[in-house]
Length: 106
Image 1 (spheres, rainbow, N blue to C red):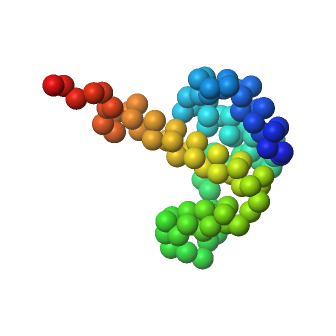
Image 2: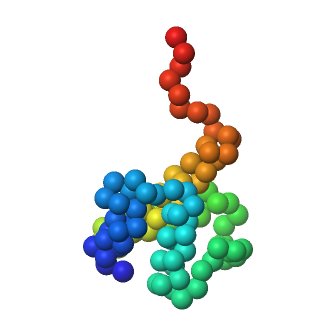
């Protein structure tokens, strides 16, 4: 998918400021993109075939690979990765596992 096509899809789905994005609909949107691009979704169990023993090593490998790609090829995977991490954290915040960001009382 071209970057401009991806950008247009994201803005059409969530608005120019991503104001309509929620943890749930971001997951649905990414699953729909995966279905369209690859013909199947992996919302269930995913088996990683990696020669490493830690998620940290897998993430480092992914990020290193993204630095080696041309910008036009790395933006979409990096945006997807960042949105998955950020909205997963928001889901934990909504479930009360992360502290609130309310200003401290004086």
